[in-house]
Image (cartoon, rainbow, N blue to C red; front, side, top):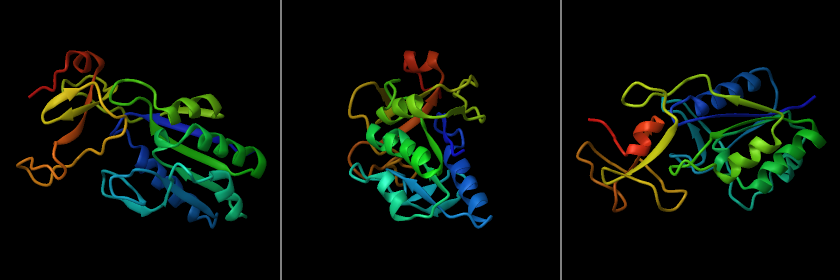
Length: 201
């Protein structure tokens, strides 16, 4: 039986690394599948902060993922990174690919946004997935506690308002010179320091 597995965690928990590893392992066994992503830091590829990367299909909101799988038939699997940014309809299309086409789907994503609220794609994946798997690598806050929140830091200050999707890591050198106006980055924090707005030293 094919399975829809949703693996989730904070930034730094190894989601993209695991996605790349699964894709590599299955492809090396002569199974045919697709690697998908959206809004990756480097464009149409899945990248890990460990320095590993692979080309991927860019998932835009209008892409029908069930039709994509059908067009590439026969296909054994889909590895989907950054699914928190997929539309709820695309999550349903992945579930349909599992049920109707017997394709294994390995999906990876963040749980909550910078406000601590579930992403739309995450919510739908939690609702439709056969397996919900927390990532085993626990990212840590600056204080050493388990990180539970992805805080958005704009010009050195935590912000709790704004658009859900804002590209981070816009700094081009150690002098924090922004590429697009504001300096935006994301910081892993425990709940206590997220609520208090404390970034540490």
